Length: 492
Image (cartoon, rainbow, N blue to C red):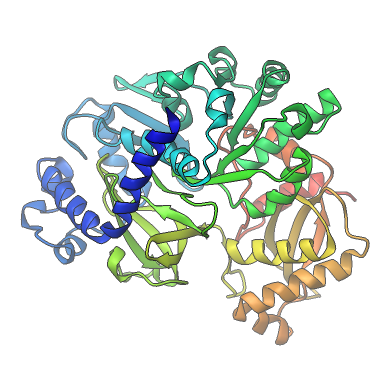
C-alpha cells in the first residue's frame, strides 16, 4: 500500500515545486482574509492590507516576547485573538531568551506538522523504492505525549502532541510504548527504550542526532554488538533539530554501516522543510502548507528597517533570517533560524544557524555554519570523530590577546592538538574575512581547544536539567556563561 500512495503524494509535491510562488501568494491572501476578524488584525489594520507591501508597512517583525500579550489573552479564554476561534493546543518550548514559550497550534495548522513528516517518508519511498521499513518496527525518540491544560487548552511538547496524531496504520509498529514515552527523566526513559527495543526488528530510527547517539551507545554497551548487527534491517535514519554533519561520522561508525538518512526542519512554530531527495542537496521548502515566508538578509536582522523579501526575490547563497506568518496566528514572527538557498528551482535550502547564536565579541560575526564547516573539514582530514562541541569568546582583561575558545569532546583525539587547532583556525579564516582580519591584525590570537571529558556535554546538560528531549547544546555563545560552566567538564 505504501508504494502507490507514495507515488501519488510525490507527484503532487513535484507539481507544487512548479507553483511555489503562486502558492505563497494564495496563502498570503488567505491568511490576511482570516486575520481581519482577529484582535491582531484589528490592531494592525488588516482591513487596509491588499498587498505584501501593505502588509510590511502594517506588521512589524516580532519575536515571542512581543507576542506575549496576545498569548495571555488566549490563556484567559478569549477567542479570535491571533487566529479564528482558539488554538487546539499550545506547544510548550523553551527559548534562548524568552524562557518558556507557548506556541499556538490550530485546527488549520496541525496538518502542517503531521503531513510534512509523512511526506518526507513518502518522497523517500517514491525515489528509492524502499518501503520495507513500513512493515517493521520504528522508533521516534521524542518528548512525553502527556498533556496538561493551560486556560482549557491542552499543552505539551510538540513531539508529544504529534504523537497523538500518528496514523493508526503505523501505531502497531511504533516504539517505544506509550508508558515508556511518558517517562520524564531522560536517562530512565532511555534505559527503558533500550530494554524494549533491543530484541525488536528495528528498521527506522528518528530523533535529534546527539540523543540518537546516546541511544546507540547504550545499545552497544548493553549488547556488545554494533547497532547494525543488532538491527540488521535498520535502513533509514530520520533526523533534524541540529546540523547533521558534525554527528554523521560517529553515528555511522556506531551503526557499523552507512544507511539512508532523511533530514527534517521542524519547529513548534511550523514544519518548514524536509529532504525530498537522496540525490539532491538541501531541504525542500514547504511552500503550500499554511505558512507564508519572509526572508531578511541576516546582516540586517537587528537594524531598524530591515529589507523584507518574499520567496520570489530570494537568491542562492545568501544568508537569510526566516520570518513566518501562519494559520496558527503567528504574524511577522522571527523564529530565530537563518537559512541559505542552494536551489531556486525547486526552492531547496539548508539551515545555516541561529540568529542569536554567533560570536561577535570583536566584530567578527562568526556564525554556526562557519564553525561547523571549519571543524568538520579538519576532522575529516585527520580521520577524527567529534561527539559534540561549542565555541565562546575568551576576552583577556590583562596581558595577552583574546581568542576563541573551543570546547570539543572527541571520540578519538588528535595526535597533535596544536596542529589540529591551526587547521580549524585556517578553515575559519577562509570562511570569515572579519575573523581573518582580526588574526592578521594581531588583535586576536589563534583559537584554543579545551578537550572535554567523555560524556562531558551530557553531564553538563544533566546538571542543568536539560538532558534529552528537544534540548540542544548551542554551537556558539557571545558571552562566557556556558563556557565558564563547561570548564568543570574539561580534561585538566
